[in-house]
Image (cartoon, rainbow, N blue to C red; front, side, top):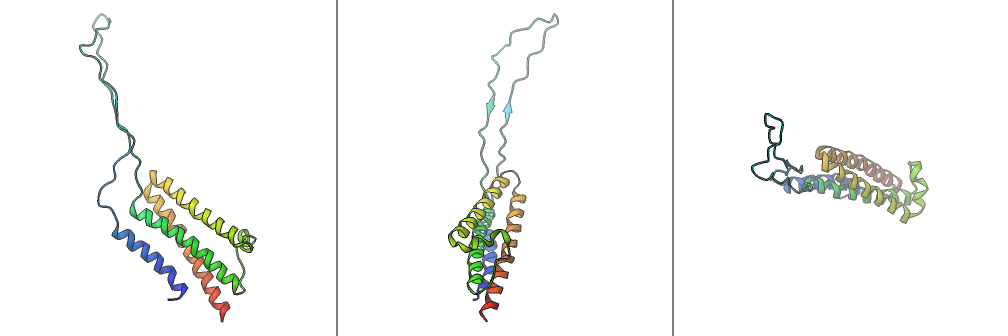
Length: 168
């Protein structure tokens, strides 16, 4: 299997994993509920009447943070994989005489460790942002990661295509 064929395989495998591991249970809402006793009505002469029983205590339900779904977790793994494939495909193209088209990364490609560290940071930042977004809007988090992963899949595919053309 060539490296160009590997990219769609990784994306397909993550989608299959997400489909198999999807949870059937509904997610709990994470909003606390507050219960308060209504005040006693005033008498006709506007004097306060003592309550018949002590007022009820205010009850709070603890905040339960929603966990990311299995589909989101598979997208986290796919994001890290796409970044790793981007590093590999970039250096494969550079080793065969290609050049870095991104001017922001051009200087970093001279140092493999720095380039890998920046790509690891990009993956971690993307995953963290999607995780935070997923707490409030799961659909937006999924759409964000699908967009990022699709863009990097195109970049990786292009890098491997360039590397294969340079090898001929």
